[in-house]
Length: 316
Image (cartoon, rainbow, N blue to C red):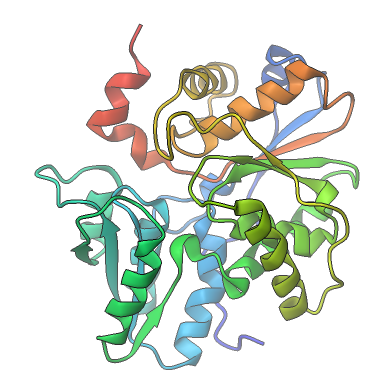
């Protein structure tokens, strides 16, 4: 299907048993593992590398010379797309929601280092960014537009592959837990497993009506991958967004600190920190019982080195 497929992600990624962390959140030893998709080899790591494996292959197949995508100013997806473009000999245009900052830091610093051209919309992260991405791509010869988060059926194929990987690593009754951003990771995992009941996503507020998007995208992805239509109902855990997408929460900060101090693993405040806070919530409620749990660490490390979050993380 993709003759130019190159695994920029370096998949498979490690999976680690975390017994001390499991006990700290009320689970038994051996019940919790972390899938380290923060350790993909592209652009400081993260889950978007799996999607970009397929998106870049499609872009090359179509003769594209420029990748155009977008996101929030501190978008992990944009940073990794810029890195993928650099590795693949392509140009990259990043459409960022918001104003150009006086200090270049975190992911934006990496965008620049990877050679991306930055275009600021002046507006905050919103659905209008999808329109802006398409408009910028239409103005560039040889452009290939990648949606927010790389979340279309082609990108989600990366997580069909991840589901196959996990099927060889964990029991068939394991619950896969991850941060729900733009929906592609969730849809790909469901399409790969063929069952919504295998995956619980913790909403971080990036996309409105995310459950319906995931349901539709999982069907489309399964069809593209030649898999059966997924069974069951989409599972999304609410309650961890906070005031809005990207807003810090006390629960996320506590989760980040706990995971760092018991497992030596660093989560981020926008995605994985909130997702692990959701996992703690599920463990406390007794919803997990004795079911094996795999937490997919989706990355996001650069965010903690921004002034906004670095001070917040160490506040008393």
